[in-house]
Length: 289
Image 1 (cartoon, rainbow, N blue to C red):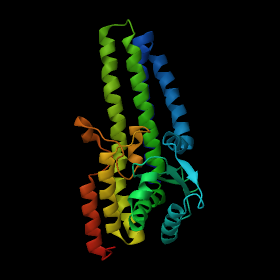
Image 2 (cartoon, rainbow, N blue to C red; image 1 turned 180 degrees about the vertical axis):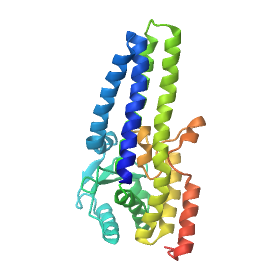
Image 3 (cartoon, one colour; image 1 turned 45 degrees about the horizontal axis):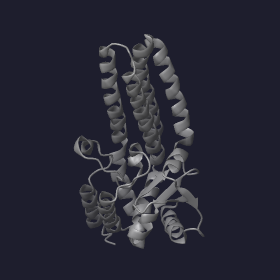
Image 4 (cartoon, one colour; image 1 turned 135 degrees about the horizontal axis):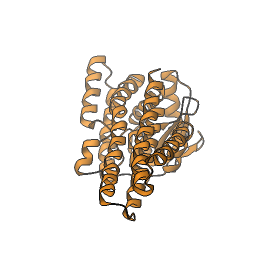
């Protein structure tokens, strides 16, 4: 029920933000606020439908993730299967992202459509214990149905940013008054920020929870802590060059790097804080592996 309510809130936010863009664009280009609002509301409805049923496929496509079998990647398959047995969960599909940057994400509408994706770099950067910690984190997202929320949020954020950007570029060729153009510029800047804030509202707390639940699944909080430190360092040195930053919240650590004000809008909690919480969990439970 909680997941459903959050999903409905995301869809409602998308419709509202798109209608705002349509209201401005309609008035700027056609002197018709109503038509612009209706058109963009309809566009939002289409994106809602597509993001619910196809967002996981869009994410997989954007990162060129390829579903593999046990024969294709026995190490990855066996580690995921080991985690599933410990968590009493069904085996998801397994995918590999062709990039040396070590990272992982989970996506899918439910457990039946769930996919756990690991980059090629993840398999070379981590030990088996550390890899198990990362994949347990992703399985915790699946267990809590986080992947639907975060995948839809990523799709919504990308769509909103694209719509605002297109509206802004279109305004540059408009002969309408400078006042309208200025209003559209404000909308083009603030609406994508609102989309980012929507993602932040569901992303950070879910990462802490997935860290804890994943660590408890394998009873080795420190293995996940070591993996997070390695991934943070590797992604800082070699950020991901493919995909959309709007989907950064799907990954176990932020695969993209930005400077300046963008650090305020990070989708993930600080790695140092996540590691400290895992160390505290190890002390509390006696699980020190």
